[in-house]
Image (cartoon, rainbow, N blue to C red):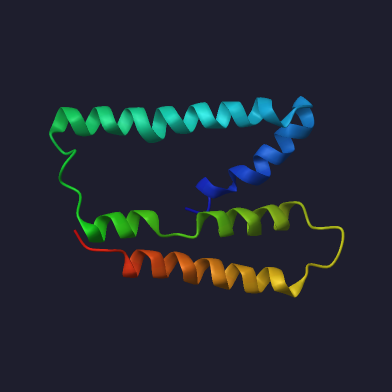
Length: 109
């Protein structure tokens, strides 16, 4: 999970070399759509698994704090020039807690 989510810092470096952040972002978006949507849907359709999702599997596959890990890796590889506001850390806690609550309290059925 950590290795997969450090694409943000790598993308940031690539943006500087390409001169336009949209070029790098377009490549990432295309790769995500192909590998994250088209390939799995095709595989699930061919195996008959499109309707066999269970709650536990979906929760475990969705949790991970990916955006939080991305920001932390970016801050580590590209340290901020000024001191980080302590409210940023509070925001991390609120975000992680909110995501956990959404998954835990979502309507059944």
